[in-house]
Length: 332
Image (cartoon, rainbow, N blue to C red; front, side):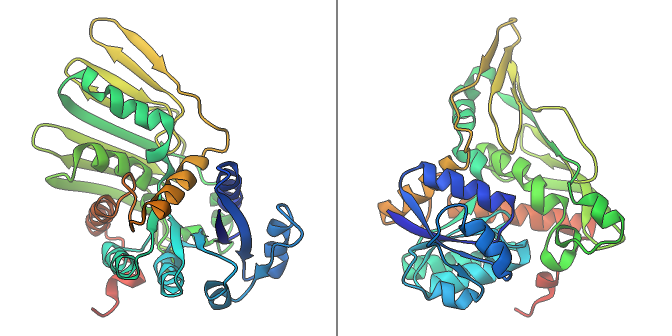
């Protein structure tokens, strides 16, 4: 049984706890929050004896835990991951796992040096519908186009527009549309087709906070193109799509796929919706535990080479749209 702690008290942390506990392979041993009130409110949902730490260094050094799930603001991910790795703890960290690829490489190197697991929490790659997509991809023939769409009006955007200080719209926290949800489109693209030969990008930079509210990316491969459309300031009801010479595959939700629809040029149409747990973070939690048990530092699915490639592509996209984070100007 892997005893884990959480850092962060948002809805995604609660969702992860539910998924992790469902595996039967993990037990919640502690939570961290700068607010003891918020931390205790979270921990009490899962047991009266689960402690809340307000000092993250104390948690990292605690012998109560074997691993940690980090869901703090993006800019804190790499420093906190390093802290826990230095104290001998396995780390699963929410996307984006670092502010830039340089930070990510540092964390990966440390995990390898310590013989510990480090994994970016890209749950979609571990979910049944995505694995089904990979199994059926050759049925649509030579791939010619990838369209990844994730546009979701942020529940916090109205608060931001009203003048409230909201972390998710502040570049000091390495946030914004690309880092928070565009990454969901980029991960499967690079997992399936590798790194593009060239990148063009545009984005809408919000005046207050300085992050991108939305953006579009065009990526060229040797014999195909990819389009990524992302937004935190508007909604889209369109699915994502992979187009081949023999047909296409529609993906209902690129960030949390539940079903794929195969449509061939001969008129064949199949909806493939493999059974999926409601607690869909179960799959990444199970992969995290499997990686720990393997004795290797990196997952076979969410592996370190893929993570680095994704973050290098996002670095390039940010350069194209002029989005600079404080970490980008850190001394080498």
